[in-house]
Every structure is written in C-alpha cells, then in structure tokens.
Amino acid sequence: MKADKLLINFSQIFCPIDKGHPLRGAEMSEATIIEDGYIAIKDGKILEVKAGSPREELMGKETEVINCYKKLATPGLIDCHTHLVYGGSRENEFSKKLNGVPYLDILAAGGGILSTVNSTRAASFDELYQKSTRLLDEMIIHGVTTVEAKSGYGLDWETEKRQLNVVKELETDHDIDLVSTFMGAHAIPPEFKGQADEFIDLLIEEMLPKVKEESLAEFCDIFCEKNVFTAEQSYRLLSAAKKMGFKLRIHADEIASIGGSKVAADLHTVSAEHLMVITDEDIDRLSEAQVIGNLLPGTTFSLMEDTYAPAKKMIERGMAITLTTDSNPGSCPTANLQFIMQLGCFQLKLTPIQVFNAVTINAAYSVCRNEKIGSFDTGKQADIAVFDAPNIDFPMYFFATNLVSQVYKNGELVVN
Ligand code: NIG
Ligand code: FE
Image (cartoon, rainbow, N blue to C red):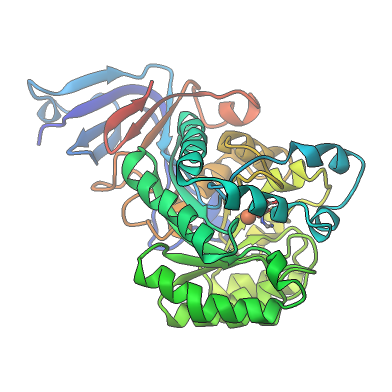
C-alpha cells in the first residue's frame, strides 16, 4: 500500500505499547524506542512505524516525503484533566498565595473557584468560546492533540450548559479533540451555602438528566474535599451518574484526605485526580480497583506547596498514572503540558519513559479513547508531536522551553 505521507529520518520515535489496558506498575517503564526511523500515514491514520528507510512499496507518485532529521516523534500528547472554559482570571489571588493564605481559605471567603463562578456566569458564549480557543491554541503548539474539558464554573444550569456547549462547538471547530466532563459539583454555589446535600439533589434530579438528554458530557466529576463535598456526597452523586450511563472521575486527596480515593475504588471510577495526600492504604485500593491516578504536579507547584503526589510509590504498588495540567485560572494557570511533564521528572522523580507513557497511552485510557489514540499502532489516528530534540531525555532536561516544532492531527500538519 502507498503512503500519503512519509515522515522520515527521525532520530528517535517513542512508541508506547498498547497492552489493552493502561500501563501499570513496572509496565510504565516499557516502550519501544525506534532509532532512525520513519512514520507512514494513510488516510489520516498510522500505516506503519519502523526503523530504517521506508520500503519501496510505500512510496507512490503522490506520496509526500518529509525529512525529520534529528527530530523526535511521539504520539500527540493528551491532556486528560483541564478546566478549560471559564471567565476572568485570578491574578488578584497571587499575592495572597505568596503570603501563605491557603487555597481553601480563599475559597471559604468567597474567592477562588467562586470568584471564577461569578466571572463565568457574567461571560457570554462568545467570550468563553474565544478564551477557550486561545488556551487550545496554546496547548496544541505544545504538542497536545486531545484535551479533556470540565464544566464547573457555572454551578447553575444556564452557565453549566453554556460551558458544555462551548466544549461541544470547539470539538467541531478546533483541531484538538475534546472530551467533555460535567463537573457541576465543583463547589457549593452561594445560593446553596450550608445546603450541600440539597445541591447534590439538584445535580442528580435536574442537571445530570439534562446533560445526558442533550449529550453534553461523557464523564461526571466531583471535588471531594474538606469544606467542599464529603465522601458520602461524592458517592451519592457519582453512583447516580453511573446509573445514568456517565463515566466517572473524582478530585480526591488534593488537600485533605477525606475518603475520596475509597469512593473511587468502590465505584471503579475511570480515574482519581490529584492524590497529593493519598495514604498507602488508598494507593493499594486504587491499584486493586485499577483506577488510573491522574496526577497534576503543576497544581502543587502553583499552589506553592511542597507535597507532590507520591508517583513513584504509586507505580511501585502497581498503579497506572497519567500527568496532566489541571489547566484552570486558580490552582494551575498554564496550558503547557511539557512543563508538567518536566515537573514529573524534577519533582515526582519519574523517568522520561514513564512520563511519555503517562501523557500518551495512559492518558488515552484515562479519556477512554485508547482505541483511537495514544500509540502508533496501525490504524490509530495519525496524531503526532514532533520535537526539535534528538531523544526523549532532551525535552525533559531542557526545561521550560517549547520544544515541539510540528504537530500532525489525523495526518494533517496543524502546527509548523
Ligand atoms: O483541580 N480542586 C478543584 N478544582 C481545580 C481548581 C479550580 C480553581 O481553583 O479554579 C483543581 O485544582
Ligand atoms: Fe481539577
């Protein structure tokens, strides 16, 4: 078969191994690394990825050949946890953070997430659309080709729906593929102060059915945290969502360990997010229940905390982990997944192979798109990040600089 495009002369091609499940434990250190190889693309899909020069049979009259000398290729990066759509910004909290005011104290005083709720309620569809587009533009130039996006800055139906519709429209309009998550349980809205249970009732009885009816989200998520939602409330919301056919995630053990990981294990959520203060017992629970740990070291960094998720211990105890930005205006205002990957090495002490597996094949499982993306298996989407780097160590070592020079999405060059 002739290829439509041949990307040749890569110094290295990172090929994650799709084993039919997220890479767990020691598997996270496995990958096929091809030296001096090529990628053949046909109809927007991967045809073959091999070492050496392309076979004669791949080369037709129409085949476009692109020289990628001294470059590294990896599957398009996947950012599997973002709060993409929001109004306003929160640089006004920055000096408070510098002075050591805790994140949850800012929230309790009506700031934090609730400040973004006010700005998002006040923002029009177009404003939210433009702002999210800018973030996606920034993400794609850093090599990201698929993004999970949560609602949760409306906390009322009108605004939640507006956020979800922005994601839906951008899924069509932007080169990045989007995976939508309903996170109406992101904070307790001011009109429900002191009535978290009643707000959970509203989410279960009114909002979730509408999200389902209008096909606005595939996942449901909740912020299980001290002074936000309890483990019981999280269990109640997520088990109702599960019955309605939603896939599940949970923000757990970010600041205080209050039982979120146990909820994740009991309900077999697809992932549990943050896990900065997870206990050893809960690591074993998640490992046993095969819940993916979505780790967000940029949040620890940006909150100016010292406690990073115990990623190495999680891997030692058999968990599958991903790395993701948490991109949001409060706890992690960035769109740069490469920097988060570097924190994966610098702070979580992961190896470059573990890091690249985390943001490709494991992240593909975390967004339940593993049949289409996350590796270079024949027939998967030709989503490719090309780094101006000779090997996978280089972009981890040469930090805080964007080293992605080209991005292919479904075989088309979208960043150059
Ligand atoms: O994952 N922790 C809850 N939600 C976000 C923060 C959102 C915000 O501060 O606006 C997070 O860190
Ligand atoms: Fe988050």
